Image (cartoon, rainbow over all chains, first blue to last red; front, side, top):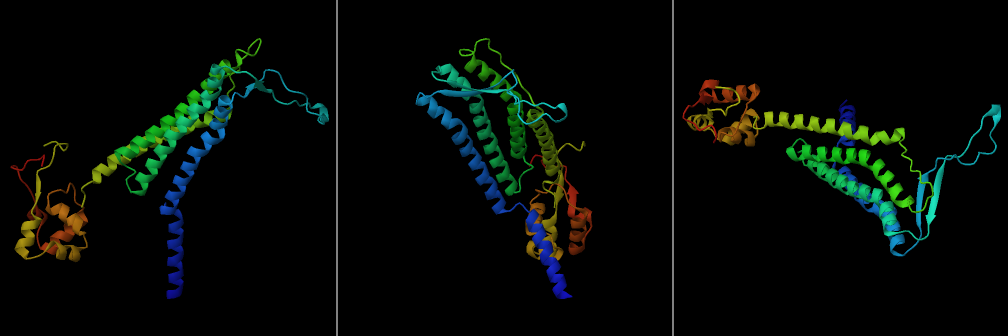
Amino acid sequence: MMMTYGKVAMRTQQSRDVWTFGRADGLAVKVLLAAALVLYPALVLAPRVVDWVLGRALRWETVSADAGPAVPGLGGAGATGHYLGWAAWTIPHPTGWQWFGSLLPDLFITVALVVGCLTLWRLVTLTRAGEPFSAAGVRQVRILSMVVLSYAVLVPFLRLFADALVMTPVQRNLEVRFQVEVADFAPFVIGLLMLVGAECFRQGLRLRDDVDGLV
Amino acid sequence: MPVEEPHRVVCRLDQLLLERGLTLTALSAEIGVSLVNLSVLKNQRARAIRFSTLTALCEALHCQPGDLFVVDETVDPDR
């Protein structure tokens, strides 16, 4: 009976350990944040900057108003299909403004990523120290929600502006399309949820103040 | 006095310990309240006390809550 109790106690301890945000979990989160901070600029921003510096052609994609070619092989029961209209442009001698326009959305995303990751880093540190419900914790959650909301609101417009900057010199009968998909609303919803979370943190701070000095 | 104003409750734990010849460490061991919390109480830094803690203190010190806590009008509430 003592052996069974011991095994149950050990299993309970192990299952509690799985759900505890331990030192290893904190370290893993920090490594992932650092990786995101390094990888996004390195993989997305840096190649474009290098192309600019080396005077290479600018590659840019736009949404095309025209549908693409028909998809072969379909047609059962009268169904037809065509490829969606995306145009991939190669601009051999882009101006400085075109390069700047092409970098604008990714520059903003990089800045948002840096601010977001640093804020999340501070929040994880506070939580590990047992102080999530503090004025600093509330501030970090609010900043994070603002970063996500600004991404949701600004990035589509930045892409629109970038399209105009890049394509105006090269496309006859310029048509800039503002395309918003359902998935684009996800960051907005997430940002709003985080604002609600920040309010929960603020209430938690108030409750914590209530028991501060309680013996 | 409105509840938002600072309090004037004074804890007489140090006097009671002296009268009964007890140390804070011994009291902590007897009632199971941490030394840190008892020190907070003794140094007038406590802002609230659980009834369970109050009961344990009164039983250990053989006193009533009114012996342990008094409202002192002369105390500066902003201490």
